[in-house]
Every structure is written in C-alpha cells, then in structure tokens.
Amino acid sequence: MSHVTAPPISVAERRSWGPMVGLFLAQVLMSFNVAALPISLGGMVEDFGVPPTVASTTIVMYGVAVAAFVMTGAKLGQRLGWVAIFRVVIIVFAASSLMMILSPTVGWAIAGQVLAGVAAAIIVPALVALIAENYRGEQQATAVGSLGSARAFSGMSAFLIGGTLGTLVGWRPIFMITLGIAAAVFILSFGLRSDTGDPRVRIDLLASGLIGAAIVLLTLGFNNLNGWGLLFASESAPFSVAGLSPAPVFVVVGIILGQLFFLRTRQRKAQGRVPLVDLDVLRHPTERAAVYAMFVIVAMEAAVNFTVPTYIQVVQGRTPFDTSLAMMPFNLTVFLTATLIVRFYKRYPPRTIALFAFGLTTAALLWLAFVVTNNWETFPTILGLIVFGIGQGALVTLVFNVLVTSAPKELAGDVGSLRGTTQNLASAVGTAVMGAMLVTTLSVGVAQAVEEQPDLPPALAAQVDLGNVNFISNDDLREALAETTATPEQVDAAVALNEEQRLRTLKLGFLFLAGISAVAALPASRLPKYRPEEIPE
Image (cartoon, helix red, strand yellow):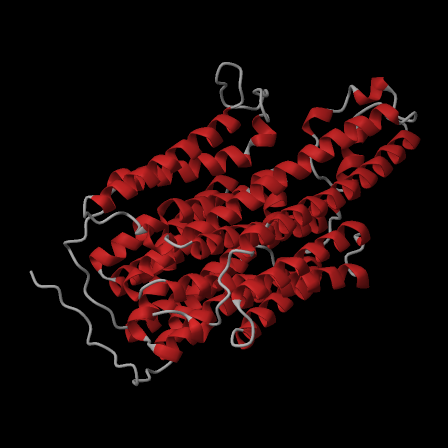
C-alpha cells in the first residue's frame, strides 16, 4: 500500500488561519480543563465530602495520564493519520467533560480526568504535527507561539469564568464550557489537511509500557509521600515493603524503569529501527537544558495554582469568584507576557531571557514569602503575583520555541510528545510535592505548637488526631472541637494556633518554591546564545 501524503505547501504560500483557530481552541480546551480543576476543588470537597488532597487527585491523575501515554499517542498519530485520530480524541475529551458534569462521587471525577488525560496525550503531539503540516515559514512560527498564548489565555479565562460560575451556580457547569469547546474544535478540524497515516509505523510496546509505568509510579510515589510515609509505612499506606512506605519505593522503581526506557530507545535507534520517541530531539545540551527548564517552570506554576486556590477556598472558606480575583493578576500577566515575549527574540538570545525570567520568579516568590497574609487583595501580594507571572509567561513560551526551532520538521511529533510528557509530569509532580510538603509542614508545626501552648492541655490534644492534620477552615475546626471537651477559651486558642501555623506553612511553601526557581538558573544558563535568525539550518 502506498503512503499518500498531503500536497506540499510552498514556503511562499500563506494558508487561511481558520484551521489554526481549531488548533488554538484545542490547546484552550486542555488548558481550560486543567485551570478549572483548582477552582473546582472547594466545590468537590463540599460535594463529595473528601479532603482537598483527595480532590486534587483529579489534577494529578490528568497529568499522569497525559505524561504516561503522550509518546505512544505520537506514534498512533503517525500510524493512523493526525487528522483522523485528532477528531476521535476530541470526542473522547467531550465524554470526559460529561463525566465531570454528572459525576456522583469523587471517583467518577478522577476517572473523568484520566479519560481527559488519555485524550490529551494524543492532542498534544497532534497540535505540533498539524501545525508543521499546515503552515510554513513565518506562519508556522506564529502558530507555534500561539500555543503558549492559548495556554495562558485559558488559565486567565478559566479562573474568571470558572470562578464566577462556581460562585453563582456551582463547579459542574464549568465543564459545560469544555464540552462546548470540544464541539467547536471537532467542527473546525474539517479544515485541516494532513497525511492519511503510515501503517508501516510500528509502536514499540515494550518502550511504551516502560515509560508509562515509570511515570505512573513516579507520580504516585511523589503524590503519596505524605499520606503513606516518607520512609516507613504509615497506617494509611495500602501496603508496606519490609516495613517501608510504598511511596519512596515507587519513586525508586520509577526512576529505574525510566532508565530502562532510555536504554531500550537507544538500542532500537542503533539497530536502525524506529523508537517510541527519537532522542535526536535531545542530542544537544541546549535542548536538554530547555526540557529541564520547562519541567521547573510548569512544576512551579502548578504548585502556585494548587496552593492559592486551596488556601482561599478551603482554609478561608471564600468563594471560587474570590479565587479568580486573587489569581487574575497572575493569569493576566502570564497571558500578556507569553503573547508579547516573542518581540524580544530578535534582540536577546534565549539564555539571556531565561536567566532574567528565572531571576524575576525567584525574587517574586521570595517577596511573597515575606509579605503574604490572610488577605490576598493587598498590593504587596498582587505585586508579587504579577512579577511571578511576567517571569512565568516569558519562560513557558521561550523554552517551547527553543525545542521546536532546534528540531527537524520530521521530528515535530516527537517534540510535541516530549513537550507533553514534560509539562504534564511536571504539573502532576508540582501539585503532588507541594501538597505533601504543605501538609507535612503544617502537621509538624501544629504538633509542636500544641506542645508549647499552655491553653491546650495534653488531655485535649489526645482527643484530636494530630497525625492527620490537613488544611481546614476556622469554622470546620470549631465544629470538630465542639465534639471534644474543649472550653470556649481553648477553642479560641486552637483556632488562633491553626491560623498562625497555616500562614507560617504558606510562607515556607513560597520559600521552597523560590529555592527551586533559583536552582533552575543552572539549566537556563545552558540555553542557546543565538538569536532566532542565527539558528543553523
């Protein structure tokens, strides 16, 4: 059977931007879904009666599903044809939105996000591949840059629209928007052109299993370090390995499987066989540095997008609309910066822009660690979020462009899968690690403070499970203490202690992120020094 390809596009030819609208909306669809999840945490906690760390599993499992299957998704697209499989997975994403709207339990919501993640695992490389096949030259550069803008625009609109709907109606109608976007993308996909696929493309199932298992184990391990135990198994651990917590064991095994995946990939390449992903996209130190930088950027963004909504909705008991207002400076700044940063590409090399941007994110996080209070509408807090958004928006667009411009056009699908794996694994790990770190810090802080608090005698502390401390509002804490022998004075003391420790934990969380941002200057210093017009052919 001959391989039928789409008619070649001449460099001079300019195509209609109509098909790109559909691709832009496909990126909006995925990003809006991800941004809507933190806004929905408060509603899910209330609807399903679960703690915020359980509700946040929807975020984690979406990221796990994308990261685990995106490399396999890239090969499926090459085998079956990008347009055909793109339409199928858009329908699957629409089905996931229906599951979110109708979910009777948190398990259904988690399953819906797993389904969305599997669909996104094919959409992510499809976007890059379809742009490469439908646009050339300056149009292609503009189209690639628009994906970063779409991601930032989605975050901004999701917090504004989702926050309003979550306050006035509820969290479920937010996902009616993703359902509508999916329908629009499906209709617009009929303007795309692509090849019909190549049945000769073979999928390395062993490599697919290795990388999928590695990512699942790594994410589950990081996500449950707090609940299952950092080293030794806790009572909530599903099982133990010679007394050890399964969480660190999962992390170690995941790293081993990841190394086996890279070994398998290099072997197939040496044998002249097609690997699951072509590691030529990482053959230069600058390209590897771009991946490391991308991981840090997305992980930090995920950590902030988890921390702030959780604190506002769950701890302070405020509405999703309050959350959207608090996050608006950050999301608006990310959108504007991601859109405008391309104007600096002809004046400054990627290395200079990245180092400056990481300097901004580090300074902003340090600033937030010192100025953040229980009131998110203060000018110092807004200023910190704006500065962080400037650095974040510049970095997200920059590192993706470094990868795309440095790779041959025939590796566009591999670049897309690498981007998807990195971003979604980073998002899952950033959310999981930040949640575990905050809860662990809060637990230790509360336990120590109770011991030093004379108004809270040991007899009262024994009635409260200090080993299972989580973020709760003052009203919920008062209700819990009402079931104990605590006097009104002791209840007031406990609430004051809880407020103090929560704020202390939040400040430590921002300091932790500032340290990660500062360390990220190391890979950023290895990004290329050239300007876009100097890129070698």
